[in-house]
Length: 75
Image (spheres, rainbow, N blue to C red):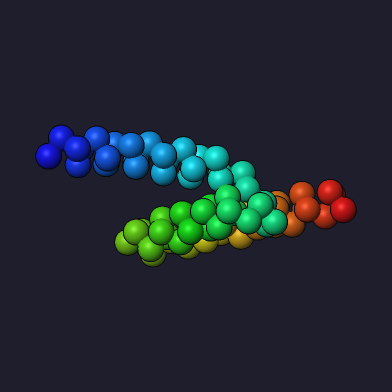
């Protein structure tokens, strides 16, 4: 029973660390960008309030625009 708790804590810490590291990922950052996008989908699917979902989708659209701008500046 203790091992299950320990594994759960370790998995949570590692998963949280990867999610945090992927927060600023851009397209082309293959692994981290995939994690970032997956976390966005999960968060959106967990929302039950349609207004919150719409606001979050608006925020995601702005994030995609910022990513495109950053990539275009890089050349």
